[in-house]
Length: 146
Image 1: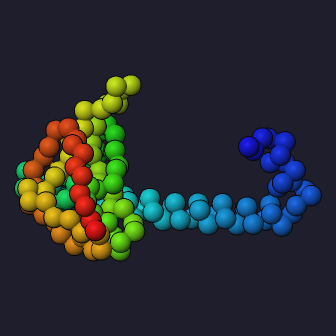
Image 2 (image 1 turned 60 degrees about the vertical axis):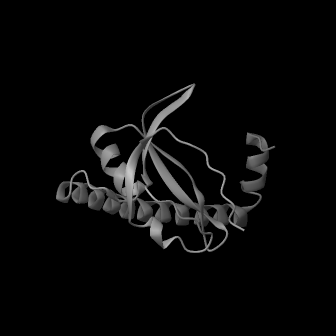
Image 3 (image 1 turned 45 degrees about the horizontal axis):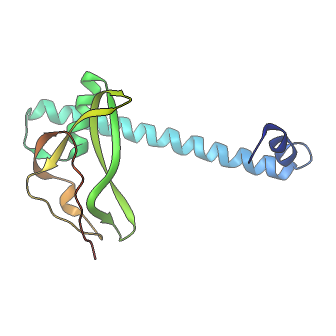
C-alpha cells in the first residue's frame, strides 16, 4: 500500500532518476491525453453534422447515435464491452450507451443497437456502420466466440 511518506522516499530527492522518469511518463501521458481530446472533439463534431445531414437515420453505430445526443442533451456516456465482439482476438470492442442521469439504483440508458446481430473475435468491420434501432435499457447476452 502506498502512503504519502512511502511515495516521498521512493520519488524524492534520494531517487532523482525515478523522479525524472515519472515526469517524462506524466508529460507523455498529458500529450497523449491532449491529442486524444482533439481527435475526440473532431469525432463529436462529425457525428453532430451527420445528424443534421440525415436526422433520424436508421444507419450508423452506437457512437454516432450517442455523441450528438450527449452534445445536445448532456447526461452521461456509459461505456461497456460490446457483447460478442472482440478486435484481433483479445481487445474488447467498446459499446457506448447514453444516460440522462445516474442514481444509486443504476441508470436508465438508451443506445443504438443493430437490427441483425453479428459476432466475431477478430475484425468486427460491420460494427462501423450498420442498420440499427434505438433501444431503451440494456440486456446482457451470452455469446460463444470460440
